Each structure stands twice: as C-alpha cells, then as structure tokens.
Image 1 (cartoon, one colour):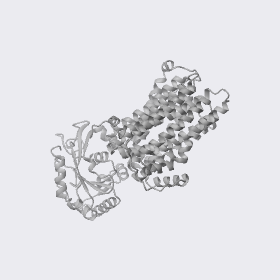
Image 2 (cartoon, helix red, strand yellow):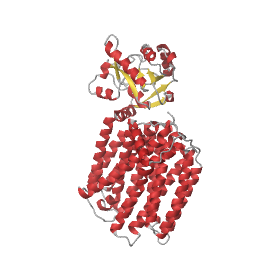
Image 3 (spheres, one colour):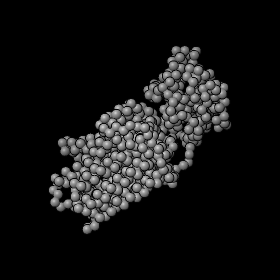
Length: 629
C-alpha cells in the first residue's frame, strides 16, 4: 500500500490550482448569499416581515433553479471542451457577476441582487460537472478518494467561512456594502488567477453534438444513469445526503434560537462544528478506505448519521425560547456537550457516506459521459433539496412537529432509505461487513493490484490458506468479484443468503455431484462473458500444512471455453491464523495466535489465456508468495 498522504496532492500543479479555484468559488458563493440574507432580513428597514419571508424563500429558490434548468447543458460543455479552459471562462463570468452585485449592494437594490444570486447559481451549475468530472482525469485511482475528500473538506470549510464573513462584513456600519462588494470581486479575481494556473484537461468527447434543449437533455441523462444500476443508486444516495443535510442546515438557526436558547455566536459554533465535521469525515475516508474506493464505508456512514442524528432529539433540553445565550453560557449548560458531540459525529459519518459515493460515480461512469452523469446527479440533488424544503414546511406547519421531532423523523427516514438501498444493491452492505471484519482482524498490505484490469473479464487465481481468503480478496479488489465456492460451505444456513447476495458460485467435485460441477462451469463462463471478475482457488481446498497444493486443471477448462487474461494472486501471512487449518496441541480446536496481524495480498502480471496452464499459474503463485506462508 502506498504511504502517500492525500495532502501531498496540494503540492502538485495538476490538483492545487483546481482545488483553490473550486474552494474560492464556494467561498464567494456564501459570502454573497449570506450578505444578501442579512441585508434583506436585518438591514432594510422598509421591508415587512412578509416581505422578508418572501425574499428569503425566493432567494433559496433562485439559487437552486439553475441546477434544474442548466445542469444538462453544463454537463455537455464539460464533456466537449477542455475543462481548464472552461473553468477560466466560468471565473470570468464570476467577476462580471460580482461587479454588478457590488453595485446592487451599494444601491441596496434587492431585485438586482436576486438576479445576481440567480447568476451565481448558473456559475455553480456550470462548475459542478466540471469539478467532479475533472478529478478522475488528473488523479489516479488510488488518489481519487483522497482527492474527493479534500474537495469536500474545502467545500464545507468554505461554506462556513463564507457564511461568517458575508454576515459580518455587511453589518459594518457605513462601509458594509463596499466591503462585501470589494471582497467578492477580489475573491473572484484570485479564483481566475488560480484557474489560469490549471494545466490543460483535454475534452473526453470533443465531437459531442450539443443539445441545447435542457428538458430533453435532462431526460436523456437521467435515462442514461438509470441504465447503470450502481451509478444510479449512488446518485440517489448522494441526493439523499443533500436532502438529509439541507434539513439539518435549514433548521439549525431555529434549533439554536428556539430549542437551545442560543444567540448568533452559538449558531456560528454549531455551524462550524457541522461543517468542519463533514470535512474531517471526508478527509478521513482515504485513511479508512486504504487508498481505494471503499463503498463499505457508505453503510458505516449511514449508521452514524441515523444514530447521532436521532440522539439530538433525546439530547435537547426542551424549547428554551429566545434566551440569546452566548457561547460561554451555552457551554455551561449540562446538555450542550452531548448535543455538540452528536453534531460533530453525525457530520463526520456524513463524510464517510458521501465521499465513496462520489468516487463510485466517477469510477463507474463512462469517461466520455462522466460530466453529463455528474450533471444528472446535480439535477437529482436539486430536486431532493426542493422536496426536503416542502416536506419540512408540511411537517412543521401542518403536522405541527417540533424542530427536534423533525430532525428525529429525518434520522429515522435515513435508516429506512439506507436499508432500502442496501437491499437493492447488496454490494454496499457486503463490502461494509467485509471492511469491518478485515480491518478488525488484520493489517493488510497490497501490491500489484493495478495489474487487475479496470474493465472487462478477468480470471483471478489465488492460493487458499484460510476461510477468510475470499473476504480478503473481495475487500482489496476494487471491482466486484464472483467467487467459486465449495457447495457445502455455500449451503450453510444464514450464510447462504450472504453468499447468494455476493453472487458466489457453488461447485462440487466430479465424484460428489457432477450436476453441480457442470452448473458451476456454466455460471463461471456466463460471468466472464458479461465482463466480470471471477476468482477461483485452484488447489480445491484450504491448505492443511501451509504449503501451496497442486493446482487442478479446472482453470484450463474455463479458459478453453472463454479465453480471458488471468491474474495470479498470493496471500501471505495467514498460515497460523485462527481461520487457517493450523491446529494447536489441543487437537482440532483452533485458537487465536495473533490479533490485528500483518498480512499481504500480492498480484502478479496478467497471463494471457494461451499461456495460462495450471502448472504455469501454480508456479507464478508460488513465486509471488515466496516464503511468507
């Protein structure tokens, strides 16, 4: 496993200018939006309460509207043109928007500022598909999770800092409008400078014919992602995250004021904890996933989101009313620390949830259509946030739920949605179980896994040391793997459901049950024909002495029917573990000798089917394993 830290990407030109460009864009969005909200809500005396509510809701709608209208077009532009050049043009647009917005702040022209807010929504819509479509072009696969984590960290920190700065600058008496306008223009100019430093990012589909009809293109993109089940469900998961997060973000001011009795400083503290928590969780994903796209973190994240989101309901003290407590007074309350812990842990687990989903969408999408897939995802995100706003209004006003009860209902809905998704795609839950087991029992080092092709059929052959071998291989190989498994193990009650969900293929010896054996070969051929990975253990059973046994010729029969490349694998360090057949002096009883022991999975170069005999593959696996049984 590479020891490279994700923060090393910040030293490289292929990532740093883009990272700064997107972070400054998110920062400027929030400086402008929150300065406008404060101007409308507190600093424009002639506006009535009804006017303030109208403009506040209109502002939220105007910023989201471009995502619904123009995401499909922006996805096409990002696929057709150089993304670096496109980013530079978007930054020029941002400067023009902020110059006009500065005039709006100086004249306190609310309609003009709302029009510029809509244009900033257009700016963000154009940048979204570019942002997530660019990462797979400039990062390799082992950097992708870390890169996404850094982007999410920067985004949420930028949201926090922009919210604080915009709210504070506009309140400076006499010169607040100048400060906001000048700051916004300055940030946009720095963003353009950073964009100009981005290296070229060639268009993945330069011959694409643009469809300027946003409605037909939106429908086309949504239909396309529906054809890729894992990508579509990942997009739904990302959209659910924004549904969930938007409810908590939207209710946080009133939760602070009415439920906790806190003032503006307490709201800023809770917002900071929530934003930084998501960023920290996003950054931790690389460490927890072992530098690969580990979708097993997604169920882990959803569990934490539900548990700590629901606990807010039980932690709150009851409606305190507008006491306007400061930070010090609030921290002196006995219930406050539990609420802070709930918020930060819920946010960290949210990072675990969202980053692997983004990385999965990026890696399993056609590179030529990747930005359009991201655009379709952005459309779904906007729709889910609109639904979240409507549902919150109904539950608070019509159903008369309290804010804590609304947050509890959201957490419980999260559990229901998560269970539903994991029943549709068992791969998420299986990877989670696998991730927990493997990372609890072992410290795994891998090498050579880049020899496993990213696309197309491939056969893996591996030595068989323990009952954990399939789980270890499944946890280390990024693509889904179909394992050939002894039928009596496959038929173990309860575990059979797990094995069937993982699409394992049961097999028997020719003398035990010829019919099962024949069906196994047919299933293996079918999986390879569909371009999947199949893993077999050619020894035919777990070693009883720690040595590699003779490889059976079944591998040759598979390749005679379906000639695909073969990648040899070798497991090291598992002999002597509780799950191996290394018996103790107590007879058949096996007891743990090591906990969290170091093991290795090594992959060799792919062997062409014409050369991949049982003898050749056995020799290669022996060479890879060496003396480390």
